[in-house]
Image (cartoon, rainbow, N blue to C red; front, side, top):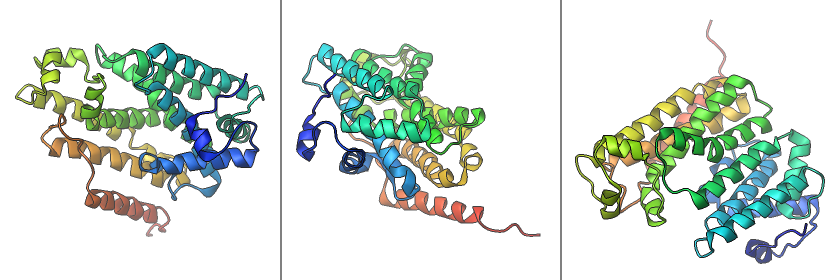
Length: 307
């Protein structure tokens, strides 16, 4: 099957059948273009793994762009995602000719990342096209199982650290982080017609979709959002032991991830859960504190024990 040449391909000037080196360079350029949303490709990752992480990011980023093409009808977006999935299947059969899949195939050959985790991400992107409401937290958690949890599991596979306990702890962190991003991006999702607060929770607090449309912040909405934020905090805290259980090269990045998720939730709470008119963001100081805390902990791992 012929590979799709996206606008991004044309912008970079790369067509089909790239060499492996060109393919990884393409993925890295895509990651750097969106660096503000791609902390996992930071300088703190082992240099040997950065190309593989960029390949995974390029795969997911392109699929996300297909799912989020607001001007295209849903059926067109779904067909693009289906073709992306067919190209994924082909790449695992040794028939890749798009730079993203050439890089992914090389990554899979070197690290053994399972195709199913990448396919799960595509399931989430299809849901982004077709599902804008969640009846209860069970449904929302199921969405996170496809949208967020595969990312953590892929990273653990890259680090060859796939003990079952670690995978489950990673799921907790990733689901908590996904929820944190939902509450941070509440206003943007609302503009797109998406609502991630479970409808069951809204009924419990007496809040309605009509209130969401009007942007009502009152004695019902504040405790409703506090409930959502507290749930995300618990998940991050439950997954936090992975920071010390994971292999050492991964611990620093995990500490930044958990700290960043907690900081986002603190920002939402600090704004009084006012998420309709603005996107709660981390201050420069918050980022400095997170980084400094992670560096202090990393130094302590190499410190000899006192006798």
